Length: 288
Length: 254
Image (cartoon, rainbow over all chains, first blue to last red; front, side, top):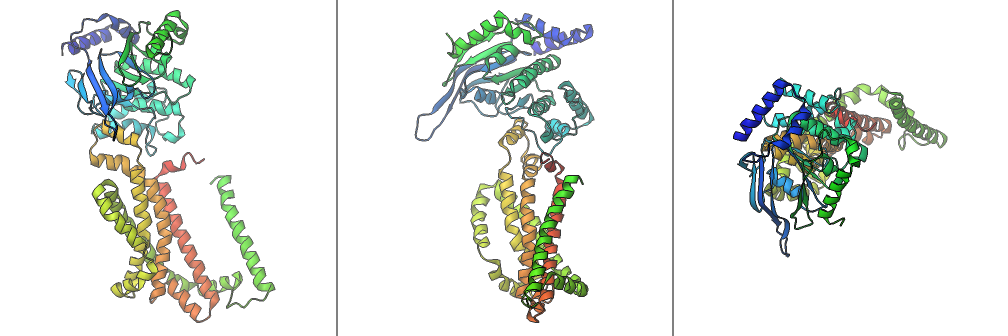
């Protein structure tokens, strides 16, 4: 509660002073003294029963905190359980044991506080771009002109102005994923959960989308949990990288990324960047 | 209508024209008796002189097929939805459906006639029975083919079962429903004719049988052509409905 109040005041103050959004993120590193973190994950354990075999342990003792406004990346090899963890956080599957708290509340089921972007854009082919973005508002019974206005704003933000009445089949993969991003943001979630959202895109589109994500986060102040298996993507976009080991997954390293904002493509070639990539590689057991 | 549309419509006409020409030449050159095989010109002449009879007899067949088809849609879709969304109903009803489907409809027709009489009702019921199966099977398949990602999205927003059905599953099933309907509507015509063959006082099937028994082959063939035209017309109506209901389905084909 107190944290919430402080943040809101801080934001109001900034709005009054008309500080550009990006500066807000740069200052984020300083409020280290927050008493209750936005997200708290303690001893999260997940195992699946298998017929005729011992149960499969996917996650073991996952413990870390997530600060409001931070972008945390879950980095790990394929099949390590990072997506499972993301779904647990989103309340889509229950954890076998452990505590998951978001915004001071135990997560036991899905909640409108969360917005999810999947690996596939998952758009409805029968809906126009605008109607796709508004889908969550219909389900939450919050359809109104304001929502439509916000949807148009979000689409403009991701560079899809003028595509409102197009059908998904008329868009490229990258454009579809932008629509999916707008759809995840339309109901103003406090936590954005992204499951390898750029995994199916080509490298150039992917880099473009990473910058877009950072830009949108700066403008919306959303907290983001992002699953990826790309080391450079993780380092580039994150405040924190949580490196997951192979199954049974534990957190092999929790890496704060202290590269300044706004991030730019040139940073990918800085020695600090490479050093961070190496550290992640070591945690993954790829490099020594 | 683009140039391509015109060209696409042109090719079938060419195909039909070639067949008709060969047919005409064959009957002419080999002096085939018109009772055995009337030439296209004979059929056209029979059709032109008897157009009022054909039109009059077309009407009941049209009604039987359309009403039977509509009945199959109205009952078949909700039935399929129930079967697809409940495991118990699926296990209970699906085997019965398959079993009834495997009975030849021609064999059931006399019984239906005993129940519903010689009038339109019996034909309507047979048309319904034939059209029902493809609609149920395709609708159920469509419901099951709903993308898991969309269902998960709906779940993440805590959508109610009704919302999931109306906003996700049913629209997902629409292409399947239309695919089933296209098959069903042509089958409905066949069903109506089967009914008319077994016992009737009117309809194109009845006319065909009567003309045949009087060795008026050109008229029998004319009835056949009209039946075919009726089937094509109903099929086209379903395609048109599909384009209106699902404007997005056209996108991506170009």
